Length: 321
Length: 266
Image (cartoon, rainbow over all chains, first blue to last red):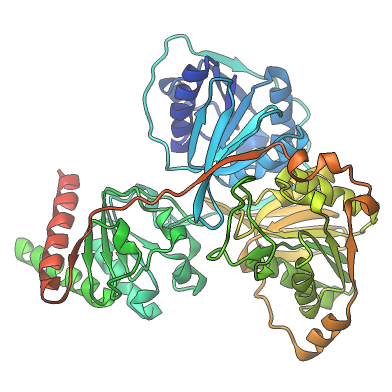
């Protein structure tokens, strides 16, 4: 059995189920989804993406993630169903629960996979960027079970796979203890929403100074897009980590990705190279970013962004007036 | 109050070589530095120690050149440095690493109130060892800690930063915190600190002295195996606009943007 874990019904759940369905078919395995949440709301939605079984572990304590109650519940369910493969999204949820779960079962765990496959023996082939994104590595867990991996959100395609006979099973949850205590929750303001943007304007150190980043926000708002950033820009605190694109930030796949003043370190390319159209703007004709771009403009990035803003503003003034 | 900080030596990821047979990183003979995220964990521990008294122990597993990184930790305020180093440990995955570290902590009887780890290393980028180790030691764990609000005699109050919210959690001691950069800004070493570090004793242990079964660690004891390492260079045919063509390039981008934006509006 392949078991997919999550604490929400969201895109990352659908992506994982879509991919896991293909693996399950190839290896002739059953596919189950374990939802650990405080609510059963929308659970029927999961059926559209191909699980044979949805296991519901619903408890009010699952309102916010805390390791103790989630770990004890996941351990019980893994012991009961003995899946040979366990997958979770590489979100703060998956990246906290899965290592604890892997250690509890004394098995291996591969972090942040960007590709998964199974071989004829049912071995999970787990591929991830390695060594700062310099190479890709494929990893297997030959003799330990379950085989466990977290999977980077935004990488797999969502594919509908309707099944009529999806089984819903409610697990009884008892005595959930938690050594940690939640004191308060303050929701974050809607961030850059990079993952959903159709157009992303990403900035690098080539913008020369923090104040110049403003022009990227202007352009993004004119095109209903979002602002991304290289690691160098986030490290220099020009922008918050929410904006970071790349191996240690977000993976994005917009219709148009504009890399302004970004040289194109592998670590950045890993997060954006599957974008539909890539526009690179850089003063250095030999910057690696041009190798992955469709359109390259060899010029000062701040100047080019300002030109784009002016042209788009002029045009909207004309159509408005 | 006693602190245990896990540190890892990382190579400059631009210059790394891969062992073609095992598929793991060749760590010998590389310039190494303290994993940048661990230096924030260390700073948090040292600044708390300075306020509350106590000691900071740094623990690492790696080849012998890790000594330099541990000396740096002492220069930055750590009191005791322990290195687990043995050829039998080479190639350990996160499970085998966690197991070896857990055994070292038990065998050496390292006492602590708070174990602090950086979010992840800049080379492996798994962020798993701290959590796996804490699970083996049966410690309560709070991950993605962005701020330590209060450290009491038997509890710690922290802010946790996740996708949709900031949360405040209270954990009993001893506990494990996996921290983000924002918890503390690393200081620069002082001259006095560097001098202390030069004379400091780095405690080095091998598998035998800790009582680790060599079959349980290293490549042999690791559940995961790297089976293939490859490059994925996606090259596109880039149309370059330079010099007198720059404005033409800008016009083309404006056209593309309008097509996508207006396509969405319909």
